[in-house]
Length: 160
Image 1 (cartoon, rainbow, N blue to C red):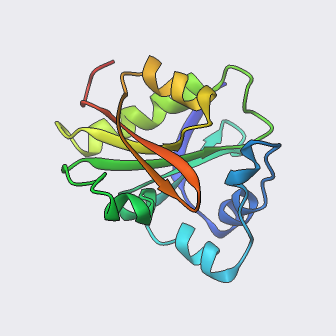
Image 2 (image 1 turned 60 degrees about the vertical axis):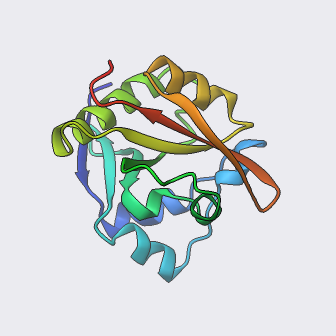
Image 3 (image 1 turned 30 degrees about the vertical axis):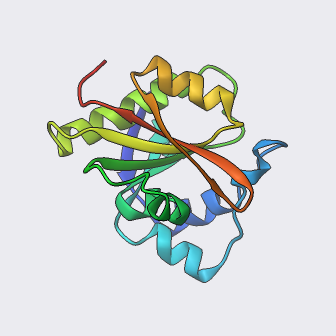
C-alpha cells in the first residue's frame, strides 16, 4: 500500500470522526461535532491517504497530541514533538501499522530535525505498544485519566 501525507480537509475530518472501533478499542471512538471538526482542521492534523486518496489514517503533533492529565502528572516536561495518531479501524490488526507509523515518523523527523518524538497510549493497547517499541519508542511515564491508565513513550530522533 502506497501512502502519503495530505492536508486535513473537512471531508477527511468528518470521515475520521465517524470511525468506529471494536471493543476494547472503542475507547478511541469520537463523536462528530462542529468543535471536533474545527479541532482536526486547526493546522496540527494531517491526513494519511492511499494512492486513490482514500483516508488510511491521520496524525497530529503538539498540544493536540497530549492528554491533559499528563500535564498535571509531569509526563510532558521534556521538550519533544508530541505525536497523536489514528488508523482507519478497517485497516487495524492487518500488519499495516508499521508502514503507517514509519511514514509519519519520517515526516516528523524531516520537520523537526534532532528532536525526540513522544506519544501517549492507553496501557491496554498492547498491539500499539508493541508497534511503538519495534520502532524505537521506550516507555517513560505512567498516569491515569478518567480511570484509564496511560503511558508516554519516547523515541530519539532517527533511531530507526
